[in-house]
Length: 142
Image 1: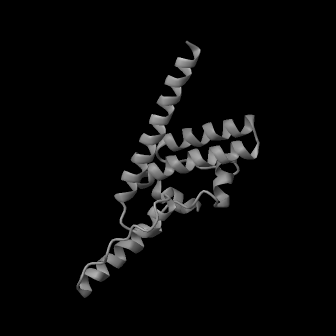
Image 2: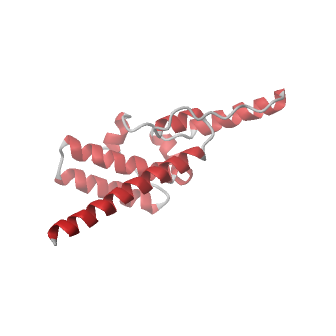
């Protein structure tokens, strides 16, 4: 009976991992520029610029604007400062404050490097997901 339960649990975990990978791949394809897809680990997904000089200029401006709005990579030193609570912030949307305070509490209970990495990962995923909401505030921090 225990073996069957463990097998069922293992199959559920494998199914969730497969679903997460498929979900991440489908989200990445929505982005046009190369850099965002590379950060998400799916290689070189590049859209071709449109033909015509005016359209190329619009395309270049849009890529530059979207590139400047990107969330910094997880190895940026300010992520650690945010999670540790060294940088005090007040986001206009309260969910960001709650998420950072939760990460700070987790890190204060267990200040190991693994815990720090997990908290940075959690914060990075959150702010990447809600990038459009926190874009201006994160640009001021980073």
